[in-house]
Image 1: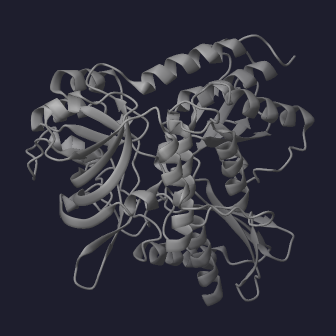
Image 2: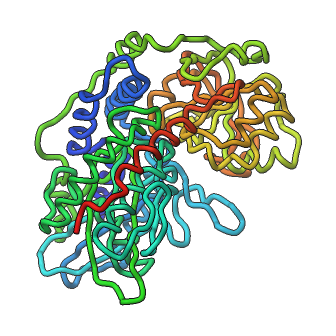
Length: 512
């Protein structure tokens, strides 16, 4: 089984660091459609730069490597116990090598196992088949997009679309609504897998299974193929755009599957996946465990350049650029407006879910007055001298901190918060009262932002685990966009409102 272990280790590393060719082609096509000089164009340039950097560094494309999900088809007689054992060993080693972030957390105690192993993690699903080789596929689906999965029980009422009945047109409305509700929080532009039918469990499984299809494949059912094409075309008319900044591309792909259901239940389940669509597969020789063939890596290759970000930034004429260095004054913050591009130098501190809950009940381990909090759970590596180095450090979805953020900013004097996807009315109100600002970084761009981090100056609250600890980071040229300011303006609220208005145009029946 030694060769099989090495094959699974290679599959994990490649999936985390090397975006599949079919996904690259979809992103490149979206980039060509976007108008130059816009925030979305700048975001796509950052994304393509990040893909190139992940290739060069053999490091995670996105710091959130999610919950690894393996799908294996094995010949009759294959030892599934040994296969599972070797996959877990490969997961443990890949985590130790900084190719995966330790993401397995005890649901009751909150303790992080540190190696991505634990009850239920990783997910490994087997299917026996009559062929003489192993088909092994892996998807790494991060928490930001996982949280935007949604399931509908028909009939139902949908915001902007009205009643969705138990018919094909009701299914259409649910899928369109699923794209609208994701906004920029799932790191759009994204991909969706849709499962029609089944029960609540099998419906979601079917939806996620669609994400193992190729971006450029064609549905064998004509009615589903027509619906897939319809959704991609019209979802991109909602104006949500990359990162929810507005723009031409909101959805990069839609794949739909159907299974039978019982008469009493009619579920439409949607699995949303971010632009960092990390799924690969290999054909493995069952005799020696070696890789015979890679999947999703055929066809035209797309080369991205790291120079595109600078060129795109120069084209973004509509925004002024401001340099911030903590401690930041209230006066400086109140000068900022939605749309401004900010470059941060100096110190910032990471803080995710555990840190925000902790700060709501305890004193801060550091003086946060005038400082910057970064919603980020980085991938860290420790060297022989015990010093930590950042391997990946993109933003996490900020809306989870909505219950805490405004109160914490006012209590500790925090002036700026960085994350992705925006925050809600409670935080927006606090920004106005306190003199604060929300900065949207580019979701998934873990290598791009890791390159801006020049040193790790310290860490507190390591009892929460590496992703949830408070890291003290010294940065240079860390770029983000003001999307919520201290004057009551929110780009996220504006895009949500305008996209809801556009969604309403799809209210009338289309399919009979």
